[in-house]
Structure formats: structure tokens, C-alpha cells
Image (cartoon, rainbow, N blue to C red; front, side, top):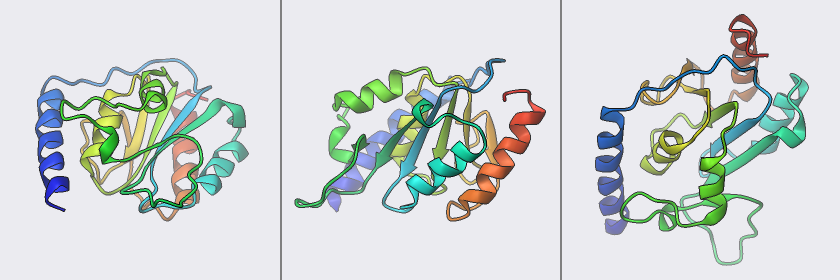
Length: 172
């Protein structure tokens, strides 16, 4: 518990320093590839969120996910890409190669699907090379290009609002 506090304190300092000079630059490109950053310690319906995106016209093979978990139990089977606080170095770099690869991928849109601000999630959003970032309005407004005021449990509402505004912005 104490180590978690110390690591979060260090990550907050790194985030604050990076956010001071950070200005998200939007791209006029259409959305073809999507990255989803999910807090799996809070939101467990990741597959339902993906199927909702597919129903709005995003190809299933163009969607990649990255999950944050508070901890992974010893006998727990974890699918695909995930990370914990242990996978972040003291300097704020991600030590797992699949996480670093996800962050370096230039997605057309990154969906930061978490409504509680946690330093490991904010750091991943901040370091992402995505061209257009979408998230919840309850998280720091400097991180995302577009924010939706909703709750994480209401994924259908979130996706329908997202696509309504993506059409207005000529992103799809």
C-alpha cells in the first residue's frame, strides 16, 4: 500500500511535468484504427464495448486494446495486452514490450475508457502516439481532444455519443 502511494506520487510528478508543455494536435484524417485503453479493475465489459464499436462500422481487426489492472492474481489467466503498476519504471517508462508497442502505435483514435483518474492510465494516454484522443470529461481535460460526459458503465451511451460527434467532425 505504501509502495503504491510512493509510485503514484512519482508518476504524478512525471505527468505534471509532461502536461505543462503538452498540446494535443488533432489530425484531419478519418478514423480507421482504434486503440482502447481500459481500466479493468473498474470496467469489465471490454468485449461488449468492442462489439458496440464494431456495430458502428469499425473493423474488428482494426481495434486493439490495452488493459490496466491493479494486480494480477497468481492463477488468473489474462488475455492479450495488460499492465500493472509493476510494469512502469520509476522514470515513467513502460517495461513490457507489448505495452510500449501499443503506446507507440499511431492509432487514428485512442479511446481512454476510464472515468477515474489514475496515474498509470493518465501516463499511458499522455505517452500515446494516437492522432485523436477521446475520453471522459471527468478526467484531466488537457489529455484528450474530445471529451464525453458520461459514466463508464454506460458504454452504449458513450459510443453512440462518440459516433454522433465523429460524423459532425467528418472523422468517419
